[in-house]
Image (cartoon, rainbow, N blue to C red; front, side, top):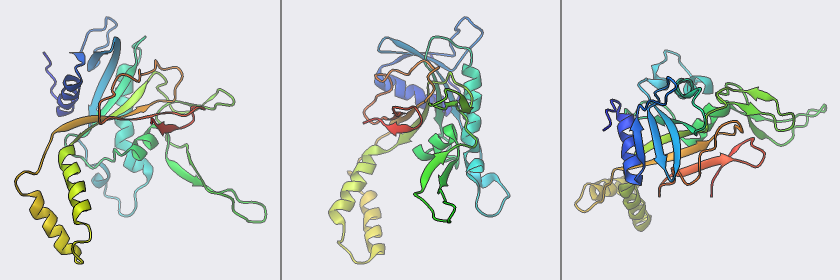
Length: 259
């Protein structure tokens, strides 16, 4: 029986139960390591370390003005680093960092921010010729990489660490039934009023009425790492009906949605 003390771990266990996965909490792997979970699913075993947030995030600074990506993404990078250190040295199994935010701390866990935390602050590059003519803008990452990146042309490491991490996962907890109802309501009532305030009031009244569906859904955003030294996370694991997955592209230089 689990003795998980953290609400993030409780939610992760809810997800594992719903998919029928077996798991051991703080297992003894025989090598001095006691990660949070050893998960068994579809004849695979994988090791997961769950980290949650207890921080004021971007609102905890006295700085006035616009914060840098480095400041905003620092809590995510910190937890990825802490989890990675606890998984270090565990052989022969996929090693997974699980991030959750059950306390609703002001930490951006959207896919764009998580991938930037993993692989570097996002920048826009515009080449300029000697004549001062600018070329096409391109998006790139580089500074503050947390996870290992290799130049595909030279094979040399160009930043980051923790080459053994197979994936970073964000655990989400949402009311998908209500979200679906709200979307349908807005589609049916779009344009019914020229006054946006009245339409908002009508929506709030309808949403508080009887028969509005609600649910407690737990699902995952999975970000496979580009490291070719990590044990791959099998695609048939963590593939619930609402899960979303990003995987390395052909050159292992970026993550793209799995379709």
